[in-house]
Structure formats: structure tokens, C-alpha cells
Amino acid sequence: MTAADEIMDLADDAADIGDAYVTLCVHAGIAAADAITAHRLELHHSGDNHAEAVALLRQVRPDGAELAAHLAALLGLKTKAGYTHRPVSGQERVQAGRRAHALVDSARGLRLA
Image 1: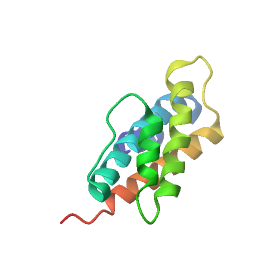
Image 2 (image 1 turned 180 degrees about the vertical axis):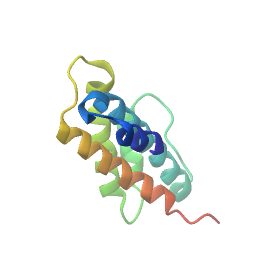
Image 3 (image 1 turned 120 degrees about the vertical axis):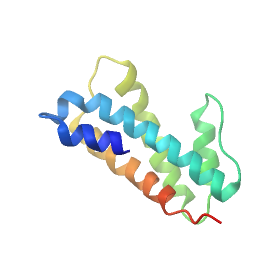
Image 4 (image 1 turned 90 degrees about the horizontal axis):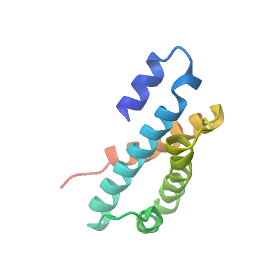
């Protein structure tokens, strides 16, 4: 998440780095989701089917549904940002940042025993 925020801060034009920013947000969200499920459920998703990671995150209480919605939305941008010729929109950049930060903030707030 730090890398995403730093490239956004350094960019002369956010549109120029939009795809890279969103890709970094997606990866930060995936890593945060893994940390959350590993801590709260003692499980984490491993595999290529990201829908399974969303389903696993949904099981986290009390905020799993909201966190799963954030991850699902980020994953929905993954292909566009990383693999197509169409750049992400300004609104998609903003939403990706908000959603990634929500997941990362939740992971950072975990109480380690």
C-alpha cells in the first residue's frame, strides 16, 4: 500500500500511473485479506480462484461482508488495470485506493497474541 501511495504522490498526472496504482492497490488488498483471514480464521486462501478468497474473507466476523465487498471490487479491476489496453478511470483509481486502504487498515488493526 505504501508503494501505491508513494507513486500517486510523486505522479505529475494521476492518469499516467493509474493502472500501476490500481494494480498495487489490488495486490495490497489481497495481501491484507490473507493476513486478516490467517489471523481471524487461522486459514488463508491459496490458489488461482480469487472468488474463494472473497468467500473466505466473508466468514470473518464482525466485518467480513464489508471486507469481502472491498476485495471483490478490487479483484474486478485487476484484469483491466493489469492486462488490457483500456486505462482505469479516475473514479476507479479513487475507489481502488479507498478499498485497498480499508483492507490494509483492518489488517494493521489486528491484535497479535
